[in-house]
Image (cartoon, rainbow, N blue to C red; front, side):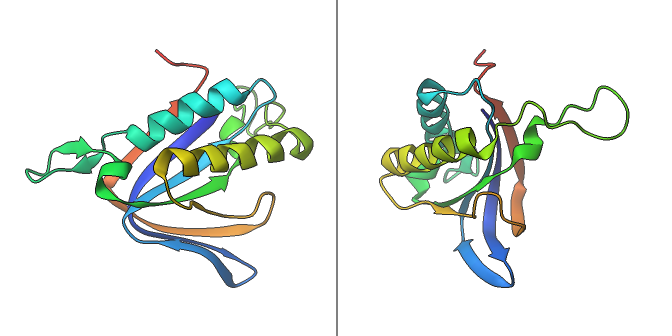
Length: 150
């Protein structure tokens, strides 16, 4: 499971000109799921993201987590995170899970994230053509792969 975590001062998701998610200070998390992902990947990744110390403390040092700053979160599914680009110029998405595998894992990820944060997490819509808007604060962008826990 791959995640791109962006610290934002605001973010939103729009589908068919309807805003379906909107947050202020918090995290926009893009999630890519592959067939090898499991509940263990979800538990590890959600705990890691919820406790990631990437918000400024009173000295503006990145020392606080999303939980500590009471920030908000939007989670968006993104199969293109598993793009293979080694050969040619057209990415292959063969590693990305098909919806029958990815949707239950995505939903479980969101539920586990809500448990970790103790609050509702906003989402896009799996498989929809989404317009994601954000103001990346910092900018701070972190990439985490649950298959590379080193």
